Length: 433
Image (cartoon, rainbow, N blue to C red; front, side):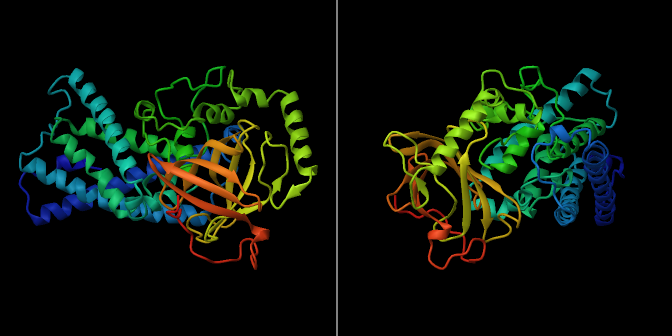
């Protein structure tokens, strides 16, 4: 967004700034439509049938979503151009070093400056991205981007105003420290836009080994970022996986999900086991046994050491969302749950589902060791699910030492409730445990 400003006149006034802004905003919008539009046309249109086997999720976003993403991205480009104009002014004032000849400091330094801009941007993105997922910031700063539960290349610049400024501020800050040429800045910006569009395309185009793992494990794949849109508490990195791995924020099932996307069994994983014929058969028999056994409201009655599997659709406390439980696809002995309806259509558009919890295993009379996501604030909590005698569920979610609980009841057990019709506010976890 900022590179062409370097060719504007040396002396400047308000007219020069206005001219620079027009010049830069045209460049920024062109860059967005060329890269996002090019990736969409190539991957999501021309190669869609050939890549159908590598589609990460079944849902195909509609035109209304893409129209919203494009309009929001045009606003983002306008904001980026404001910061680009600031870079133009800073250079004219001699406060940053942007030299015109890329060979002036040698091609070795040129390559180093490009690499450094990319690596530092990944760090900037990771830490600011984590920060805006904090509950106090998420709804104000980052929610627009996560309205795209199933992203497209057009999602790349679909930001709230505040998030657009946060992302744009990286380059002037970096240029205060790193002398760079317009060509280096152009390469950095093109790489940023291309990787951003690819990361939102919804098809896993990165290569894999026969083991089902990514060839370039240190790069974020399409699956890596798609998991962030599906379960927002994980995978904050933009280009590289190392920050997520060092900080423990990489999705625990990332390898399995990548293997699913490239249609290869992951050696030694639950995904590989589930592809063996005997396992689905045994799992089906177990599920049938559960369904045929006598049951209390909403729970299959089993002996004290066997898992009590929630049946049907449950309403969250406050009746803001409905959740359907099922054995996890990655491991049939674990429990997962999808949100199938939400009062707020911005949280879950009609007809879509959203993975809300997963990874729970049965131990000591309850489901433990899993995670619970809150789509309202984008955070993920450690959780426990305890079946109660009346067929309801007690859910407990914890972040560090702070814990909250909710009671969920089956939709058909809530007086006067018809699934998908009640319109009560989405309730956050109550402070009662």
